[in-house]
Length: 278
Image 1 (tube, rainbow, N blue to C red):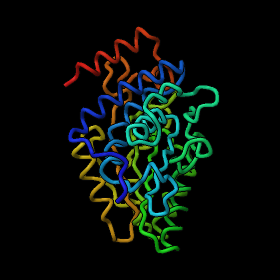
Image 2 (image 1 turned 120 degrees about the vertical axis):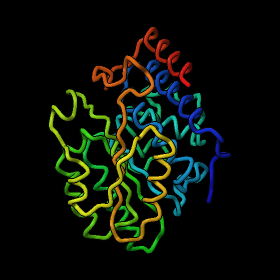
Image 3 (image 1 turned 135 degrees about the horizontal axis):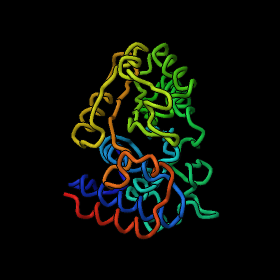
């Protein structure tokens, strides 16, 4: 399998460093979404270091696995992971949302090699993932398609059309990951438009469902390993219970930090907390 870099021995330390980068790049941009980026970074780290077949030197390599960040506003987390995996220099992270930069405020496949689908309009990613997984089946290719969704995003009807269609086509090569942080721009998900019982709903749609702590790296790895080896004709979904703003006390569970960039004082405070955490 092509790999970009030597795998680190301590993913926890790596996620800590990338949390620092997320804070600093959003501070530098003066705009962005720290809450959902901090909630999904642990999942993306395990995914990109332990599971996805990918080659930063050949981002269009035909044998690669496909990943879609359907909750595109969390792209600072994806950009951090891509930088550390070698898609572009780490210093470029500070160009987030700058005019002309490939690091746009939402992923843009025409600007950034390694982005499979341009996201930002919520609710579309899983439908595209279903199409990619169907294509793999039709072409008899063995790549996986992984789609990360937000829980607020799952209020979109298009998501449920995709959840309905994937079992019909027996897409056991499709893995959905729900970043279940219970926060969206207007408030808590369970107040804006409840989606529970999410696990029961997904099971009733004939998906294989796992529910985990999305910040437990071992739990994430075990869940992905189980989903990755599924051959039962059923699509796989991991409901990852996470904390919006994870790692920064004044951001955690605080909807104000859904799409609010920290000023220097808050960024310094956040980075100190992250650095001091064990």
